Length: 491
Image 1 (cartoon, helix red, strand yellow):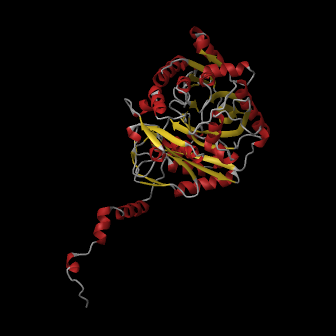
Image 2 (cartoon, helix red, strand yellow; image 1 turned 90 degrees about the vertical axis):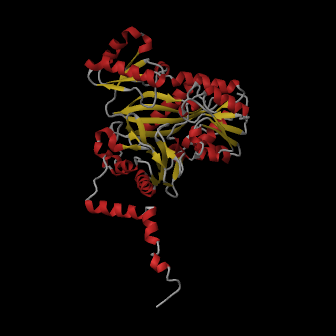
Image 3 (cartoon, helix red, strand yellow; image 1 turned 180 degrees about the vertical axis):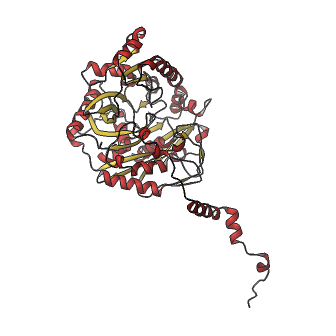
């Protein structure tokens, strides 16, 4: 690969990941550009960027998915490279091709790798054909007419998934095969709605599994390393809530095996740039789940334990530079935990919430990756994640204590969040013991419920809140008229 150094990078994204990428871009002395919809006009990313370029669309999300508009405006602005972040266009092979066709560098894997590993069915077939572990399954594309029968033959419990899906959308667990036809139709309908693609596949569902993923990096010179694993088992509705590294559930031998399998898959795919290989793990066995051909939301925990800036590595690799280090040079120090702060109400089935950001005070001395600011407004236009609280400790117990304190010190008023839920989760004995699986939250519904306040405490809180109201404070500070007219008279 010919070296292609660049000095300006446009971030084709929004929110906290735009801020995160801009931070490294600017620290490296490069110009950082960002696109934005009018709904994000006052966001931290727009204020932080060296240049901000407005885009439009029928909805805010549509604007960030408009590949042609983004490429055209990036080219007109003189951007030399585009970083897609995560979500939106990050795993869109045609977008990567369009970026290259316009003479810019796409900071990510090759379009061919995105197409191969981004499609769950193609990726699974590729991995299985090369001898890596996959769960028993049935793929609709192999023979659509016999898909239902082949899925039934895999046996229950069964997980139905859209071939083009991600983020838990359209996934259905079938424990009673009498309901298989009905669940397949539901999954197909959701796949069409979320991804415009109703193709499905079914695989054996591992009960009470752990979700383990491995960060990999590959360059254009054939070098591939893993940056060890992350535990992502704390999820609700197949979406991650807490991530940590290292996993508390792996033995050293299991860690070495799963990480080398991930690196082997990346080598087989001639993978370049940052990627994540995900596995389902249970009872000492693990199966390939999927590969995310982009930077992950939870990448900070890997950065915290390895000391490697993944965005900086992405930029170096995109320029054509070799990794510059071997597997034996990568080490883990301590333990890191990431907590996703969502605008949602756990007590109401984690339903999204909205509202103004009246006060925003992140904890001091703690890494907080955020794309919001005081005075902003949380709307229903985008994903409800507001910020990520990332802590590092000498041990897992130390990291948990730091996470508890960070949440206690975090102030975000005006919009209901899951902060209280996260505090109760951290205090849960099973979590403290590292005993977790992807259904842990569903098995502990009481963690989502707000504790009831006794009457005296409620009166105290309401009294304190009322004293903070402007009219009350103004009245309390006012000087009565008869006293104000006395002038300087003293008795």
